[in-house]
Image (tube, rainbow, N blue to C red; front, side, top):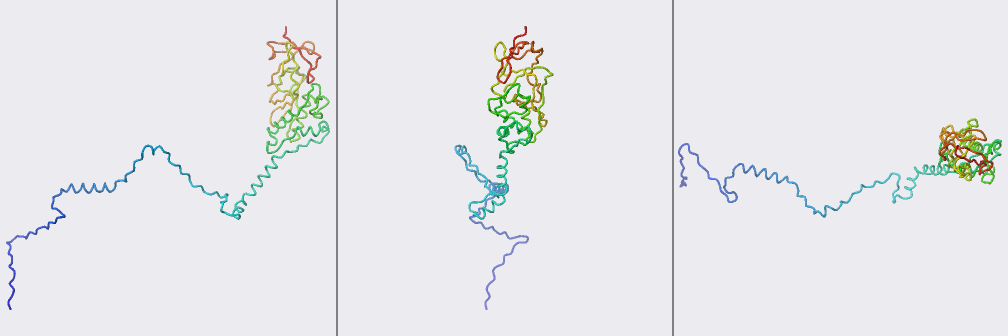
Length: 327
């Protein structure tokens, strides 16, 4: 049997390694790239991958338009019944607050109801009629006024001023209370009568009050200014240079109502209140019945004036007084 011939052996010289050629393809050209360029491409690729998205440009006209304000969502109240809740849910939601609504209604109805202030049942009650007493104490409710406080006293004082009293200088020493002919043409009394009656009104609502003499006969006559007299017909009785000087009056004494809790005098005749009577404009009068004059110049004259009491009676029972410059 014939044997195939063996391929010839290649004999290399000693210390010689065969060199293999690298395959060259069309897709990967054999170009030499510097190592630094590979590093830059890697960094650039990383930066481009992390680049933020592009923000679209807004025109100036669109920037001027106000953006709509978003209101927070309204949460349903715990006490508000939703429309679709039904009658049962409505009753269930109203049940917890029903007692408070009813209670508030009762407080409003009772609190604003006029309080009936009864006249004290004593021997002095016959000096003032029930109708007149209701005029002095009407329109008072506990909800409108702090009971026993200044607002209640002021409200009753306002009622007293607007009742329509008539004044007479010499009435009051015998009649201690006024109001029997309230609103009539007959005089009711003087400062003492008014103070006595108003103190009685305050006592009827539990407020301590008493008439006090703020100026006594021992201190002598005086002239005082009264801006508003309780009797609107009375405007003055002193004449200076044959002209009436309004709002000035000459008295021998005076009485007002002292309210200790307020540390204040309430003066029904003068429709005013004060902490001290001396805070009013007072001009002392000196001399005897025949020769009277002011100690200091009154506001309506430049100097001291002489005073002459005449027999002519003005409104309110005041005798006309003629004032002339002291010569």
